[in-house]
Length: 313
Image 1 (cartoon, rainbow, N blue to C red):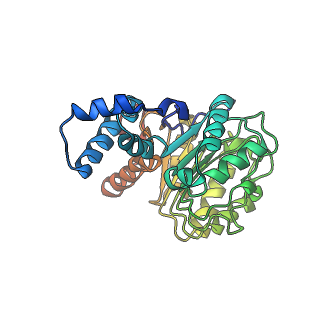
Image 2: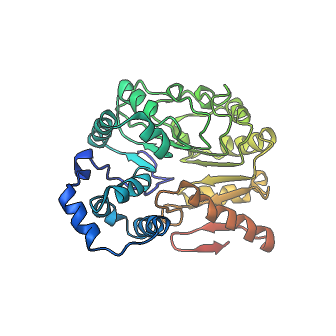
Image 3: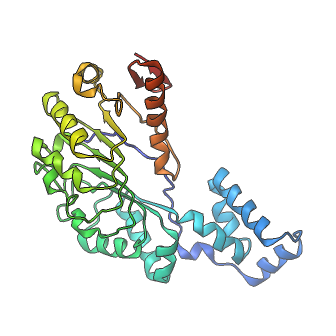
């Protein structure tokens, strides 16, 4: 069963280009009835409105073409493809827009569905300037790997174990090849599917800027995990925080009591599905971990996240 750790909530509706058609008469009529404001103030109002009330984005796109341009910058900032249909709609949009539109506006791409290799290549080619990539191919996908990705702009990388790397260990991930020189935040989910060997963890040292690492979905045996923690802390010189996530309370307690997790950089979590919840901003999930690290350094106690609050152990 696929672990649901690292769940992210991001905008899921990718509007078709047909939704944005604006007639001159309706546009002019609306303009004639509106108070004229400075353009920078109008833009700020539109952006704040969409940030607070995302459901208003399509309506604002239909007001005037200027609003449409401002709204699209936010609508397309984060793209989540969690089904075949959403991927096909997005590819249709790619075919209808200039390439510069996507490279300039899309900053976060979350790929959760079973697109084939050609579709993935087309999507990644369009999203050539992303800074965040969630790479979670489904179990139906057999020909996708991170070798398709070549963006030095990526700073946040989220990976899932199956199916692209089953039983191949972390050494199969192209992390030591210099492909991701600027990644600072890395999540690897469903570790139990990857059967990592001790030496595999040393490949994480190939990320020279890595400061935040989260690992989840561990196998029942605690020994590989504690061995991995020791090696990661020793080999990743720039690492500031290491989050270890398990939904098993017994497993988490065993980790908390092990000497390898006494390092102040290590945080053991039992869940973050509710606490690590952000809309369109993946970095928000680390705010809780950083808060925990600060509190633990002040109180010298074991901290962990529950569904509703931060708790002292």
